[in-house]
Image (cartoon, rainbow, N blue to C red; front, side, top):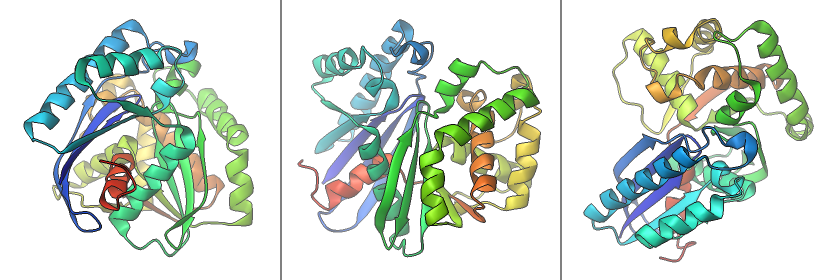
Length: 310
């Protein structure tokens, strides 16, 4: 069987094409993404702005055409924060169906978190030790506590990078007062997570999103490391701290010239770095990893184990 998974995120749309055997192995054929910025100009008003709406339709249609070229047996499409929190999200889903015949499943925060965990679990296969999984999206950020390959606790918070930029409108470069404002917002919003981690402290953080990917790529570029990241990348804490210091004093123009940073994350990477740094310091996590498997791979996992009808 060959399946395509299309993940309609707030910043990027992702396409995964994989060959798999039911209850068996899988092989990734294609893993690609396109910048869409579906949340641009509309998140604060709970809507998808007209230009972003059209970009989303165009990009989804392009990814759908690629999937058809691979003669896939099934296409599974999901949407996350930008679509689920927007008043015209249902209009977007209907327009996609009218053009392609694909029904987009709009995931609630808990379901999104569950799929993210399944993706990470598919990559690592053995999550015996307690871990905290973190996925920074454009509209929301998901946290999942897991042990012995099981979810202990999960929750989605409206702490997405694009949402933050639209609400705070930080200076360029961001100023210390704005960083403190962001940290205070994190502290207040993440009280449910703090309560859980006080009872069940966890030392290992696994990040899975484009922000973690960009941070890893930037550190690798700085070191002249051209090797391909497999399923998992471990951050060196000193490297991460040094990159954080560079990012929080950088202007957008300077970030555009930073090796390893793709153009469509130039505006959000500072926020991601601040949030990650806050989590690691506040909850005293000692190890940070980047998992290349996340939401769309979680959907693939359910296809492999027949938990989604094909």
